[in-house]
Image (tube, rainbow, N blue to C red):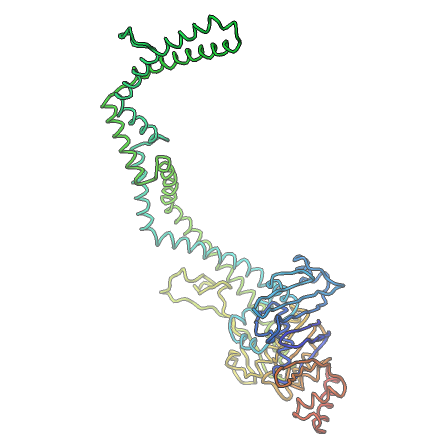
Length: 578
């Protein structure tokens, strides 16, 4: 792994070679260089404070060697990335405004992809992880991770059933608690549908009735106008001296028809006059029929107005017009059918809920059995590792229990496991707790209460070493996990990290010379400043330089002969004891 970092740290390159690399330096310097840079590469939160004042951005680049079939390589290629001769190039840019960009294999990708790749590339552990190990949830996760498929397979089934039960319970609760509201809604819908059904409106009926009402209300005026127009066109039989339009047009047609053969233009006009005469006769006939058909019936007008009033009553309540009223009725019928079917739905959901609770009980029991089967092996493996870490008499055990509900509790709050009703959650019904007996004769106690800071560091390291054998990742980064450890215990921590490095790349940020001495390679991060700007640099320590740094770490005096002798002895011990 190769990291190039620019920004709050000056342009620097950190080569993290295979094996065991120790990063040392003044307090905080190594952590800033390695942990912060790796955190950004692995999808960590982008903090604009990382950008040096006056700079536009901070950039971190990494070159990670991966096999073409490795999960990280496959996932990166799915995102469009390309491997460069077995090397995956990753970069992260953080602007001074806080914006962040990520690139993988030459392709711009969401920052979330870096987090996905991190799961298969690097396991990062620091002092905060030690505190996390104190939480029962983290301890259960540790056991589940160790158990592998034995737990993950039933846990996946349990999780799916648990989510379905939550959804069913929520819907059932909504149906039962809102029963009164739904009943009121159903009554209102039923009343409205009955009111509409009583009127039986027809499509476009309101428009047609409005036109009929207008016609009936002006029947006499319409009939008089039609009769007058008919008389003007066809004449009035009672007035023999009156001249009508049809007679005049007919006279004009006869006058032209006598001479039409002498001029084609006049012939065309004659034809048009003939057409006008025919059209006037048709219009006159229709006017006569219209006048005869008009019925100024006040009873029919009253009936139309009454019908229109009934339709208007509907449009005031259910829609702007009859089309909208009919649409409301259709939607209301569908909603009423849904509401009327709630009782059946409640029965179905209750039956499904009970079946899911029974299924969850069986799956929770399967999870408990799988965890108990793995707990003994996990505890023995961690205990064996603690013996290698200068805790030969320590014993680790795993306690798996369930919280039984009192008889007064609602049965829906629990599931039946082993004949008992116990509390349950999204990961099962088990409460998992790591117990530690650090010395012979001491009873096992939760590690939160029974482990000192140094012991807790070694327990966490032992857990990680156990994981390395069952679920390895290519690289482990330990950020001062040796805090609280010293003396012989520190030597054993360094020796165990060196052994872990035989199967994985191990990077340790440490201030303990006993740990750094076991590293295959030691990097020194130094801070310098000219009074206004602080700069950081990285140096690979070899030979005399490494002895001087270990002397500083041992006694704070690089040139002390006693410290130098102790440093050289420590290096020889580490080389012989790997």
